[in-house]
Length: 221
Image (cartoon, rainbow, N blue to C red; front, side, top):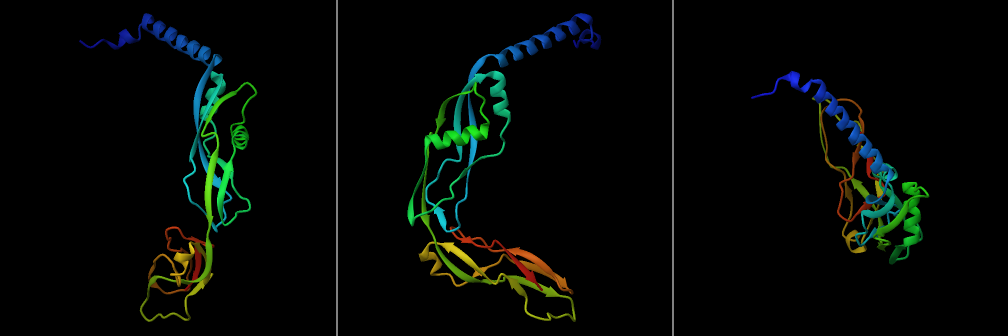
């Protein structure tokens, strides 16, 4: 049979729950004061890559960091730094080559990112270095082709051609691909019942392994 509510509110039960909560609190505080090891996963992003450079391998998107310290410090590390670790790879690029982020460079970046305390011991970093392979891309200037479906209100007409700015953009990609391209299309612009001058922005239609100097285009209708 079901226990009455008064059973759960009795003095003995309340005292037991109080001591249980205190015991859990003391255990948690004691655990935080002891030295422990843990593994922290750090997300990684690469910045400073020029438009005319393509990464040809797959560098790691996260780093596993094994550290040792008091539980309180490890708890702070685990709940902080939600943003990725930014690795700047802006430099002089050759036609084709490699960039090596050494163990010392990686450790320095991680220490600044994590704001490591003097008591924290780094036991291991995986991977301990990062190799980035790249290839320089060709560039070509191409006209922008507006793809649209614009319907005007009855008895209205366009007073001039639709203005597209910029009308030409720089396109980066492999030479064999760029040689086959004559223009860059926008994403479809649909407008119905247009009866007044309109300004808007639209995006260029994305193409695999192709980059643009401008991703947005200004239109005046």
